[in-house]
Length: 199
Image (cartoon, rainbow, N blue to C red; front, side, top):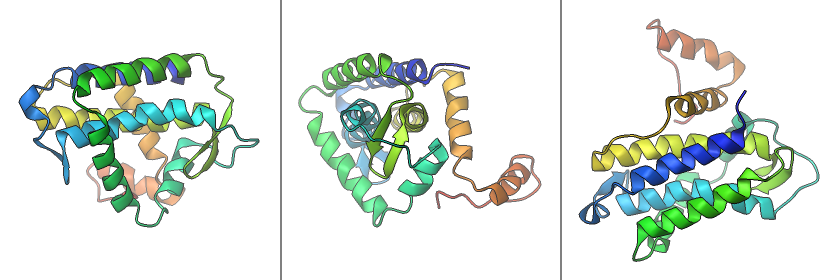
């Protein structure tokens, strides 16, 4: 079993490597939904930043016991999509005049901090309290998904390691309740359709 701190570091490095391939004239291109590429990168960078900043908010006990519980709780936030969209726009502006340098700096700082943190430390996040070992897969999921979004938007090679994509897939499975997973298996094997909890 791999160390999620190392996995997070590799996912952040792959994200940074893709950002470094973005040309100067591509930052204003359509990124994802209503976001430009700049705003998409800003949103993805939040997955790096929050992994480190959450360490500033310790908690006594973990209310959430898995990455899946974290995401299911997050999906209950009122007006979630609108709030996420606005934070993406703000994060895009926060990248400043040299977005690549900003991403490099933020990744270096966050990875260094997370790499020495205790995996069993309980932290406070937007939807409750959770152990770092259970929170980091949610950050890896975000980095894997949005790094791919960036690659598709600017037509560059996706540098994300395949084993991290697998971690993201396993994390995504946690969004499905026990009685929904059989439907997903049927979909994956061509035997029927499954309803996504993200819809």
